[in-house]
Length: 195
Image (cartoon, rainbow, N blue to C red; front, side, top):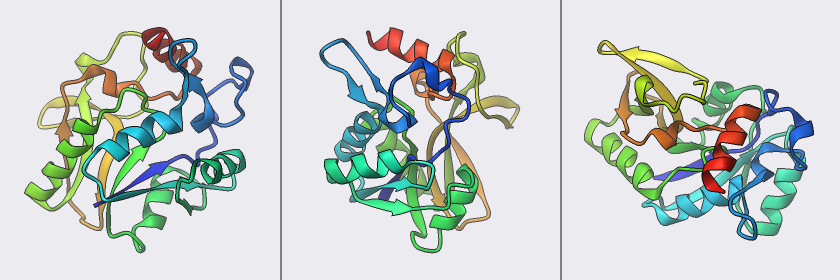
């Protein structure tokens, strides 16, 4: 199983005046003197997991991220950059099963990745990482929620993507995993928690 870190979005919900980096994957967060780029945080976590290898998906929207990946020796794969789901469908013919990881989930742990891979091996269909909506920190607005078996769940940016027409959620009990940096408020929350 490989992982693909999705880092080609337009970051349209972030106010570019609030940070110095021009692309979301390159935003730095963490304690002063120990700040890391979002992309590096996620890449380190992916490396510590049970995946065999990983690529960073870049697009025409993220030329600086592509440049940074070359410097960091991250393998890249180009996608059209027309949207999250569109890019996943674009990748599927080349990679019939993979772990997709958003580049903007700073509290991701290798155990999360390993657990979702195990869920895939148990069911052999696509798996969507989620947490219960009622676990979401108050200051975070979910980007996508859905109902499953009477429970309201929030997608958390980690999935096993396959050609299967069926999919199941894998529910994590870690509310920090729901912090995807999509808005300025999300960025402020993540920075304050890490600082």
